[in-house]
Image (cartoon, rainbow, N blue to C red; front, top):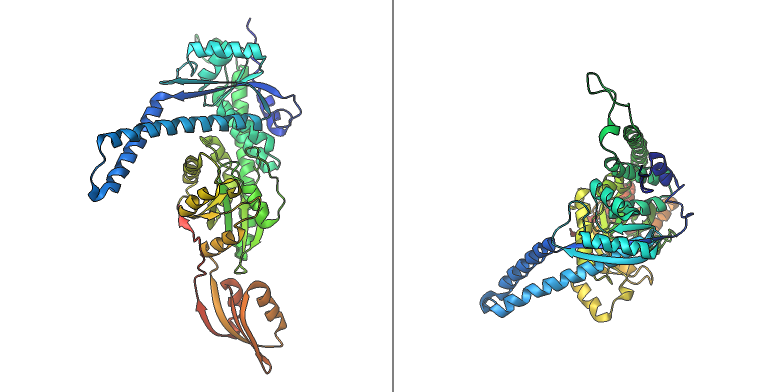
Length: 497
C-alpha cells in the first residue's frame, strides 16, 4: 500500500505552522530547493504583440506632419519588445530566487522551461519533468519550488512523479508571511490565507470519501479523515474570520478616537523591498526592522510626523506588494490594509534602481485597484537614488515624483514639502491675531504648532501673523483681526494615479 507523501500536511500541522511551531519558526534546518520557472510563449507573443501595437500607435502620433514611419522602422519596433520580454523574465526569475532565499531555502538548482502553453496535468512537459526528477535525486533536494500557481490536480501529479514535496508560488509567499507574522492579528491573517489555500487541495477521491447515507448503495464506511479535515478547516475559517472581525472592530474604535482630534493618515505603499521601512525610519525615527528580505514588514506601523507647516500626520508603513500577489492575501489582510483605505494621501515608494521599475508600478496599481483606492491622491517617491547614476537621475526627475534616499536621507525635505502640499484635510491657513500678553498659554500653543511670520508688541497687546493648520488656528478665532486661506503650494504636489 502506497504511503502518503510528506507534503500532505494535516490540518493540525498547518495550524502549528501558523502558530510558530513549524515553518514560521526557523528552528528547522535549511532546506535544499530546486527552483522551476516556466514561461509560456503563447502568452508572451500576445504580450509582445500588444506592446508592439502600442509602440506603433505612439509612433503614428509622434510622426505628425513628418509622415508615418517606413517599413524598416515598423519592423524595428517588434524585436525591442521581444528583448524587453526576455529582460522581464530574467528579472522575474531573479525575484523568484530572492523569494526562495527569504524563505531560508538553499537553492540547489534553477531550471527553466519555455513552452507554448501549460500542461494540464503537470504544468511542464514530460521531458522537463524527468529532468527535474534527476536534478532532485542528484542534489538530494528536499522540495521543488514552482514560480507558478498549481492546480490541486497538478500538485498531486507532480508530488507523485517527483516523490518529493512540491510548493507553488502562492504557498511559498504564505510561508514567508507566516515567518514574519509577529502580532496576533498578523498570525490570524496568515492562518486564514493558509486555510483558504489548503481547503481545495486536500487529496483523496473515490470509495474512501463515501459517507453514511440512506438507501441501497449509499452506505459507506462513514466520515473519512479527508471529510473530517474539510469540516474542521471550514469551522476554523469561520472562527478566524470572527476573530479578525473583532480586530476590525477594535481598529474602528481606535480610529474614531483619532478622528475626534483629526490627524490625516499618510500611507506608504509600494513593491516589496522598495525601501519603505528604511524611508519610514528616516522620516519618523521609529526604528522598525529594515531588511533586504522580501516581506520583512508584515504588521502595520503608525507613527506621528510633523510637516514643515507644523501640521501633524500619522505615517503608516504597510506590507509590500508583489507580482501576482495571491488574492487570498489581499482578502485576508483587509484589516491591515484598512489604513491604506482610510489614508488621505498615498506615498508610492518605488525602487529607482530596479530594472523592473515600470512593471512594479503596474503591479502595485493593480493591488490598489483591488482595494478600491486607485482614485486617492498619490505622490510617487523614487527611493534608493543613491544607487542611481547622475544621468539617470535627470531622467527620473523628468517623470515627476520626488527623488529620495531613505538610507542617506537625501531629498527628505522635498518629500515633506510635497506631503504638505498634497494634503487637503486640515488645510494650512494664515491668520492675523491680536491678543493680550496675559494669554501666554495661547502664545505658546501658536509657537509650537504654527509658523509665526510676524510678531510685535504694542502696550499690553501682541500682534501676530500665524500660518498653520486650520484645526489649531480656528481655536483662537476670537483673537483674529482678519484671516486669509491659502494653499500651501510647494514643489512635487500630489498627482492622481
